[in-house]
Length: 310
Image (cartoon, rainbow, N blue to C red; front, top):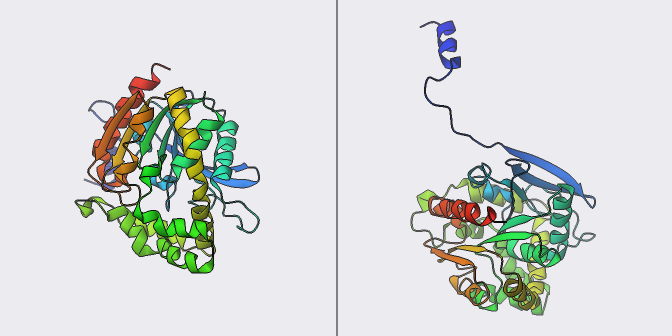
């Protein structure tokens, strides 16, 4: 076969059935209050919106595999907070790295995009960002997907002891042990601890995240965010009251072997949420990286049932 024949064969229309729809993810950046906020966006413009809120130490990168599975039926938006992923990293001397500020900027982005109602997937740091959005706009939240994201005192176990010590006395001596949380060893641990078959986890994850953590000045940013996490605890009763009052449909898909946010923090949601679907998954902190084959069908089914009614 000559080159011309080979090109004709490659370019010829398939004789089989039409190829399945594969949503395209767009990678964009918008100025919100003077800060460049990067976000991934996919799916039909007028479909129900799903906002994906990432954890530490990653970014919207953690949702790269989930987005195409949701974008066939939903308009998916996954932002990076300042200091994470591809968003700007302003100097912490002049910029407040707080969960209040993160929620304000995500809220500003959603407003720019014309989003009035949305479901939320919250994980790790994404939970306190998401709770603040929900308290700002309780009428806007159509559903919750919670994956290792805390809203109860029971969920903060021994991992948090040195962090709580720093909250009480934010000095150099108490900060020093926390700097180890920003190292490659800890980043890899977050992806592999509690996972039965580590070959299911792409090493690209910790290589990608660590390269961003190692940027000059980023450790100071992470320490500032970790210190601000203390503000979430007094907010928990208000968040729990929101759950009881608004009763958003909720799906919990929680890595039960997570050392950082153990399953102790998953069970209390049952006290406050009536329309709750509860799944403990046999994996660790970054459950999607290991158990997407279990979690994605649960999410797709949940969103199709719950958002079709709203």
